Amino acid sequence: MIQDRDASLGGYGDPSAHPERIDINGGPQLPEDMAEDELTRFREVGHVPSDSDHDPASDLMHTNGIAYNAALDQIAVSIHAYNEIWILDHSTTTEEAAGSTGGRWGRGGDLLYRWGNPSSYGRGGDAEQRTFGQHDVRWIPEGLPGAGHLLVFSNNVPGPEAVHSEVFEIAPRTDDAGHYVLTGSDPFGPTTPTWSYTAPDQASFHSPFISGAHRLPDGHTLITSGAQGRFFEVTPEGEIVWEYWSRTSGDVRMPDGSLPHPVEQFPYAVFRATKILPDHPALQGRALTPLDPQPPVVPPPLATE
Image 1 (spheres, one colour):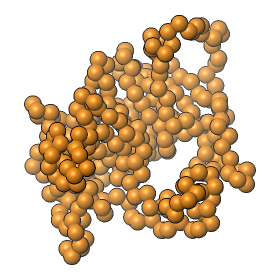
Image 2 (cartoon, one colour; image 1 turned 45 degrees about the vertical axis):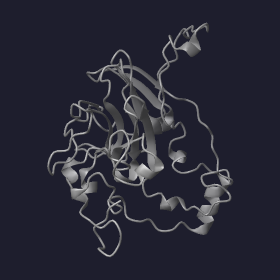
Image 3 (cartoon, helix red, strand yellow; image 1 turned 60 degrees about the vertical axis):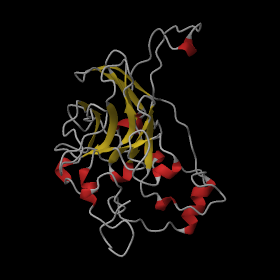
Image 4 (cartoon, helix red, strand yellow; image 1 turned 90 degrees about the vertical axis):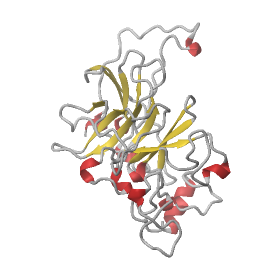
């Protein structure tokens, strides 16, 4: 951790000089404590353990995605509150992770890489921010187009037409030894994604929460627009070649029978989807006869309102 607010406190320093550290003041403002009656309601629906006094309002980072790269022994995480993705060394011991040395990559518990919002470490402003309330960071596996790159779903991107969602594929720059490159006072790159997808009209593709994307063997990308329960597959050129809208609702209810926020607006919400191909070992020996005729693609009424 690092902070530049109070020299009498620990971790004092310039965040822009230490992008490998987390500026405790770089995220959102500290939220107000949750009222006791609201905290009780969260316990009743299982959002907080019944024997815990944890206040969900203290969730300063809101980590909402994690991916492990076994070849690199690294972990990528999506940090919603900082509008960034971070990469850490998984190989460190607990003692090494408490410092800045050790582990396979020699950096201890420091961040190896970060991307999406350089203002959170003082190396950029609003113009350089690319991820807004993002979800579901994933490495593209070996053998697939874009192998070694990262995919991330940016939920709430400002735009000239409307706030919308975008999917980014980024290729972090590394040296010959595989270490992430950071030059001078520049932020971590790239400045431009290798590939991205958004709807031509922007407004028709917007999921304000949850959602995700992953690369397929043929180079297509499966995207989950989670708020609407919409799954669609796009080509590298951005053409939609398959689409499905979920008609299934989990019907999760509060103790008083009401729908919890924000599900009441999005009854068909799905966090994310993963496409299982016919040659997957779990499907061997099973009948995979397609429905004939196929069901029509009809968005649920509430998904288009």
